[in-house]
Image 1 (tube, rainbow, N blue to C red):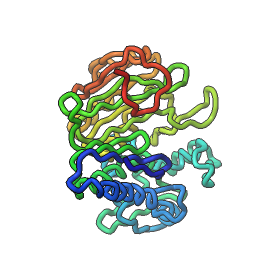
Image 2 (image 1 turned 135 degrees about the horizontal axis):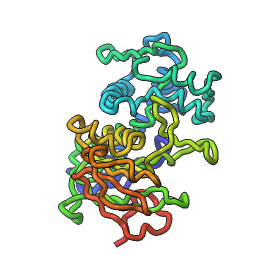
Image 3 (image 1 turned 45 degrees about the horizontal axis):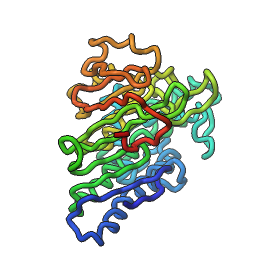
Image 4 (image 1 turned 60 degrees about the horizontal axis):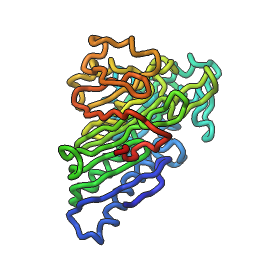
Length: 346
């Protein structure tokens, strides 16, 4: 296994089968980690020299010509803005600034309040030309935040690098996202088993269950992963770009997709829209997902409202909804605080 601190977390790569001598595996893994580092260098809000920071300062009045990584992220973002009906939108950064995120890098709230931040948010206020690779903000004060998609995209780049070097089986981890290559010879049907954590009623993070997934990516998300404020004014880091902070109806989400980019973006859609998001996504993107609802929400979703999702059980007393193709293993006793991704108990 090789690991590296990048993108604000630890990236880990474990090769289990490669089309190269074993003594070359470390170098192959390092190459894949380099692909993740490249995304961090170009799409970080914390590096003033990054392509994203230059875009945010230069796209109004613009136009600003993006580098290839940011251009890829813009192209993927445009697709998911459409697919999600605007629940996913990287122009959300003015709202994040309004709520107190990114103050450590100098962000400030709009003096006009939430209405001012919303006036600088929205994909329709951005002109993106994929042909020329240029982007232009149509109103001053706009800025982009790829935090909702960049880790999944970075995992895709790392997985592509491993495939090019002949790796047939590997596990990649980046924060709360994973990419699995090949199959697990010890797993049921060759599937990989991954434990899923969610906040408990007491605020601890506890095992909620496990998913069995084929090759592809898994992303997990909770609105309580990062918060600002206190008490009843506490807000999570997943903010609705269309309305600002709204009370969360979801405790945690897990999404599998063939692409890390897709899995990462879709978690935000399910956090904001809950199980009904599945109906809107039907036929538009390949994925499987499970949603753990917040307390007191279970009565709000009937069969027609949930569409392709159905209630499959409970976790810590809360209803769990899932798509039919997701293999979910409930845990009768979630147990004490456990790190996400840790193997479930036997």
